[in-house]
Length: 272
Image 1 (cartoon, rainbow, N blue to C red):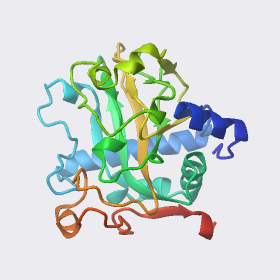
Image 2: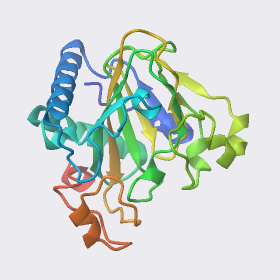
Image 3: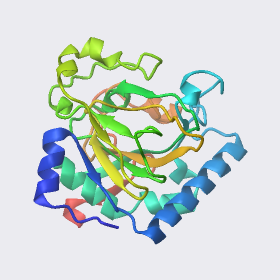
Image 4: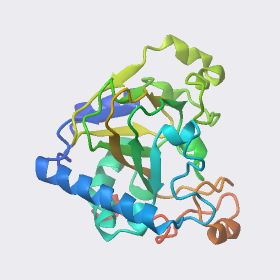
């Protein structure tokens, strides 16, 4: 794993809100990530059991609706698959996320397999953190390409620097690709950046940076494994998102989200 960050990479991330690291995984690591993700997804779908109370196991409902054809989505695979847990709990990932975000500790918000199907729909421009149960400009995600991500099959796109001016206003991932620009019309003047990258690459991005993906115009899936990270010390903002019902009902706004079973701490500067 190419887990050593340079000062230039850190500066680029903080200025633009995203960072592509090609050849993040070597060939053997990539094959392990592919096999583990495929196995974990197949196991989840076969079980027909959601892992978070009322959260649909693929969060797509009717398989024929628009959103279901944006991507197949399975969350919290580390909860149900030992191999995925080993990958996601790797402290090297936490240290990279913490270093880029400039925080002293990283907790997992949730992992997520995202498979854009053959001829899949585009992913509309959106922000991540406003969906989640905590507010933090230091929220960060990793997106690992399990297949070559290309302009043809729906690679990631970013509005560079948008994390600096984003508020917590957001839109859903719907049929209107540009709905977000009704909320942030000033971003229309910023040239979007495409991030095609070979399989085994990683893209880190801020939870406050505007991003989306094109349609998959090919007859093969575009698979990715992702994880959203929460800075240690974050507090509850009142939104349920993927929190279990019982835990959600036990919280009040301002409570620390420090349950090690639900949001495990995978890296802390004080323990490194």
